[in-house]
Length: 333
Image (tube, rainbow, N blue to C red; front, side):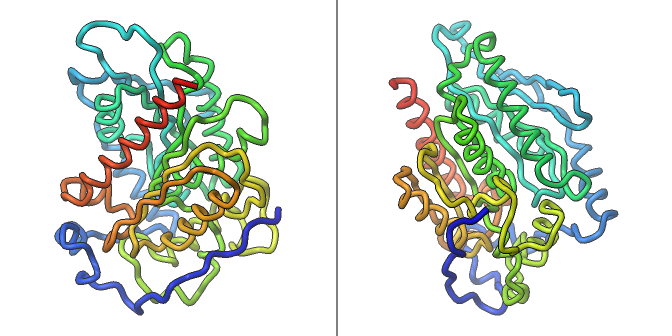
């Protein structure tokens, strides 16, 4: 598959420092441990820790449900807003959400709090995908699992009070990359398509992982050495090859015409900053509406690592407002 050119890059410092961080984020990142994912035992330890996350507690604002699919380790976690006045009188919008973890770690449960709050604040159903991970399950398995979740949501929409034309896709990091790839695949398949794409620091371009000059930068939270492990595991091949399979690498897609509107949020000291802005530019060149929200001094995953920071609250408010407007606009046709 041919695609768009590799992103232009801006010079990076040899080593990221705490002083490079936004002031609101310095405390959270000062001692934040970088994930260890190179070895299988390290990934297993990370997954074991995630397995200890308790199920969400019942709240007055949303209802939680787990649905398991036939393939072991797959399914969805459903967060449905509770209307104090009783059942909703009209169909709701929805978001199909995909968690991050570099394709090799992570679980849907890690985003339970965020999903529940989004369901409550926007009055939409949030469906969080549990997908299988590389390297044990390389491409196309994780994307196929996300497609299965999309199809389940479309089939279940009517019974759950969801308008199937008002469903967005979204995700963070590798989940953002999977959401972008899912939007591309659904467009190519010619069936129902998402109303919008909500992409937090999406992992979009394997060619970044092929750049050894970035290894020494030591980005906060996710370095290019981590990136190499993630993309190599997912593609089951070294990243940066001349040709990659269709829908494996969103940034390599040649024709982006017809994709749904996108919001891409990323920090300016995130490893993915350049590839994310390059993808945003490619979307606009293809006539796709795209909002790029760049946060100064913000590294990878800051919205999860520093959830209480003022800069995070403002960032999340902008993301919610954009998604709410897109789903409302979609409802009006």
